[in-house]
Image 1 (tube, rainbow, N blue to C red):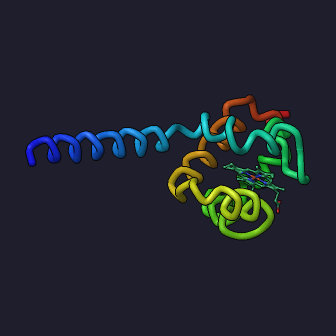
Image 2 (cartoon, protein in one colour):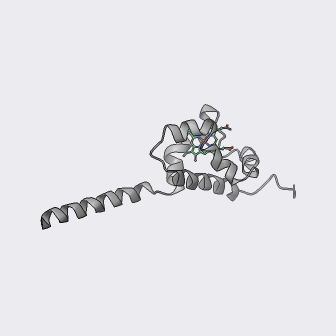
Image 3 (tube, rainbow, N blue to C red):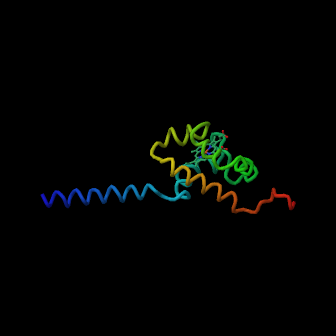
Length: 112
Ligand code: HEC
């Protein structure tokens, strides 16, 4: 019985460890899942490097971007095809994408 307990405990640990591996950062998920479209404009996706395109999307507010992950074109590719991605993970990845856009100088701002 003790042996079985040890076995069960280590199985639980392995399950925990793989759950942790899935809770990866937004940058990794972006590279693995999103970049196939958002680096190449595949399927008409806005390229992440297209700052002007993203500035106007970001201007609608983060909630609107998150909501798009549950409706519209991107949802079909992300939520429907990658059911393994949690809502939280997708949100983190959207945050990462927005942070990438905002890292660059804002050439569109009024000082120009
Ligand atoms: C198969 C192609 C494809 C993949 C993969 C993909 N997207 Fe998209 N994404 C699109 C398209 C197409 C649009 C434009 C949809 C629109 O404007 O209606 C879009 C738009 C978006 C938007 C903007 C939504 C808005 O409201 O303006 C965000 C944010 C986004 N994607 C995030 C992601 C994230 C995060 C991932 C990875 C987890 C991802 N996308 C993976 C195709 C893709």
